[in-house]
Length: 132
Length: 131
Image (tube, rainbow over all chains, first blue to last red; front, side):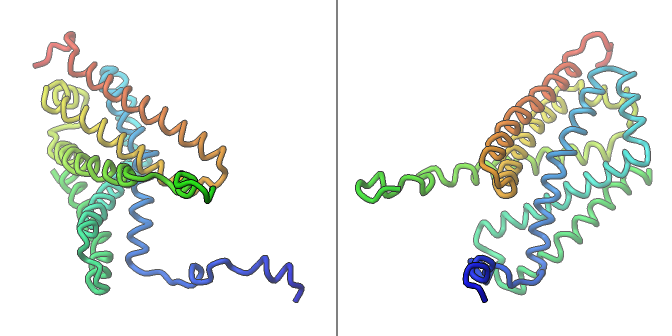
């Protein structure tokens, strides 16, 4: 029980380390992960797509080869999910910004529903593309 | 932080009057993204084909080209704000944080400029013989 070591390892704010996962925390970190994913992957893909169309038939064919491959489609499905997740979660944030939806039941309900809606919209989007 | 003058007492405590500016811009650009990216997603889902001719014929039209340019500005602006908060939260070293934010500003502006140029090249191309 040497004073220096026991004191230095004590947390400054003990309450911050006492928590368990809740739906609001999960949807919050999903919002950030989806947003950063779109910023670091989605926007470069968008620029590649636009530059490929601007470059003409040959450059677009190169883009399409990669975009249509299994890894390209994996990235595109991931990006579409990230958009729908971030959008649905962002709409929830607009409601919270108004000061509404903080009651525990309401908050938990929408925190669960946001990722469910996002997955449903992603499925709908790809169904519209693939089932034509 | 001093304790004598009134400026000394508030110095280092953050901004006043403009504290909500970043937060508001994130909301304004979010509204832009909501409209424009939903437009992009619906347009892509309804696209008759994904070959070069279909994409070129789509983006050469003035309204899709305008919407795409607005989408680039709105999404890059929103992403710049969002990545800034991400870096402020997770890059702990002050020097590295400043370098990260500087790189972010350069890349966001450069990326948006490149995207707008690409759309302009598609929309203003005359050699394609399209509509």
